Image (cartoon, rainbow, N blue to C red; front, side, top):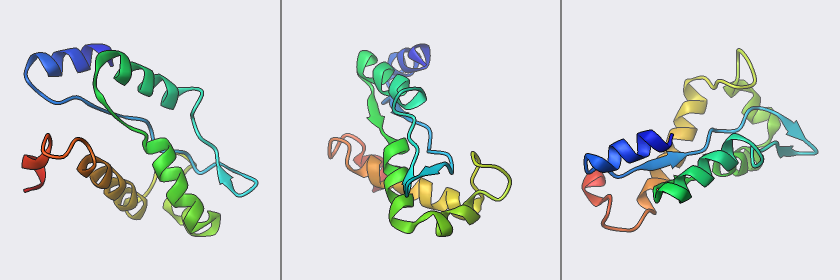
Amino acid sequence: MRKYIRDAKAKGAISIVCSPIPRNDWKDGKVSRSADSYGKWAAEVAKAEGAYFIDLNNLVAVRYEVMGADKVKPFFPVDHTHTNYDGAKINSQIVVDALKEIKPGKLKSFFS
């Protein structure tokens, strides 16, 4: 990941690192997060390399918790990791919303 960020920056690109979306794993009405594994590592690399970071793991988990486990379950028809089209639409909208909040003006041309 460090190499990807460095290579992108060397070519003038804006590096944005996203943590993985959460799996459909629930405990006591809360979605399990990867705050001690992949999500943590993604945040650490982004910070160390000066890249933007979008904590998709937490942002999506919060949205899922608002919706509730019964409404989220259909987004994972095959396994607890991969969403279907409807789940992907929700997750991608969260990415777009997060991108719009990154240093106004810096990414403006992408949303004009």
